[in-house]
Amino acid sequence: MAQNSRGQWNSSLGFVLAAAGSAIGLGNLWKFPYITYENHGGAFVLVYIAAIALVGLPIMLAEIVLGRKAQRDPVGSFRILGRDRPGGGAWAGTGFLGVVAGFVILSYYSVIAGWTIRYVLLAVSGGLGEMVQAGRLDDFFGAFLADGPQQSLYHTLFMGLTVGVVYFGVKDGIERVAKVLVPFLFAILGALAIYSTTTAGFGEAMTFLFRPNFAELEPGAILEALGHSFFTLSLGMGAMLTYGSYMRGQDSIPRAAVTISVLDTLIALLACVIMFSVIFTEDMEVRKSSTILFTTLPQVFCKLPGGSLINGFFYLLVALAALTSTISLLEVVTSYAIDELKLSRHRAVLLTGGAIYVFGLLNAWSLGGSAALTEINLIGRESTAGVLGTLDYLASNWFLPVGGFLIAVFAGWAMLGSEMRREVEQGHGPFRWFTGWRILLRFVAPLVVGAIIVSVILGAEYQ
View 1 (cartoon, helix red, strand yellow):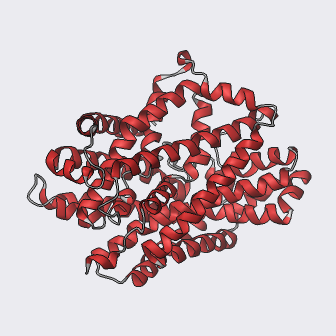
View 2: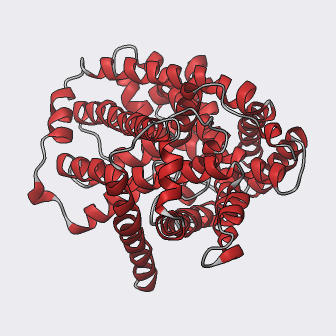
View 3: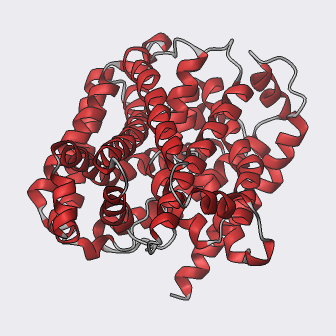
């Protein structure tokens, strides 16, 4: 297939916004605030930021470099770049693992993302506020999860939006939508953050987040910060590699990778400011479950001035963040069908999107009530409930870390330093941090991600 039929970003900004949208998802708005609260704030936040810089960013940079150099999907990239290197064709398995991860994650992520559409509609219609006032929101959410037809309906709507964007290609679909959705996402988040400064709990939230107390930092918290820094940037599933394969030669990879990492971290911190301001204002209990996002927060928001409007904007924010992530997940699988199966984009999108949609219906019908979701945190380390929980556990604990580990090893050890330097400096100029980046990629990143994998093995052994 001709190289130009794959598509290409129209601008560096388009790539950055699309990749940032891929990284920014429900994990930023749902998972990160919870683990930050659980690990006592300040010191954990500093460790997390350090982990982004020392582990997440180096692997992201490597993924983008490999993608642009090979100009192929994850499987094709590792097959082409792995030729005549130790391991040979076996490296293609790393790319295939990413494609499988994208397929599996999207099949349940779209189900959960569909809930946000339901809540946006409820907030706009006033139904959410009415249920809060009547004390019926908990019962509604439990019944909603157990309602297979409703779960299927909103899964259908979200997958339809996702397929619709990817169908129109890289430039006219993904990039065009990202240029609208991501700035709008930041605008909503910024407005909510400004509003949070008016709440009684804002000062306490800022102290909790940004005044470190290392005496409260436990060893397990360090590992959790390292793990989340890796997962939050959409690493190990081929998303950044795929997006990198559409990048122009004149664009700077280092600048793009740093910008994406900063935007992703900023979103996570702003989400914490908003949620902790509310938490400390209302002295609410934080529970490790989906209920904090879909039952507890709406009730708290409704107590604040302009609560109905806040709920509407908040769930629109969550929906947009989810959509920018599902787009990238589908593109990973679609790129494989285009490059390896030689399908046209339209046929590839409809075929892969349709297969994921059907697989997702199994998740939509398997929830069986709110109890099934008590341990689902999206890219968590303990999700084991039901079919959806099992898939989340497999993807976040095995597919992504193993994929990330292999990417770091391949880029750091199989690829020659001179090859990596040429690619990373193309469109950027001399990269003075190259030696430091290569050291992190060869030694620090594999050790850290390897430690995450070992902790999962030991955890599984002692459960």
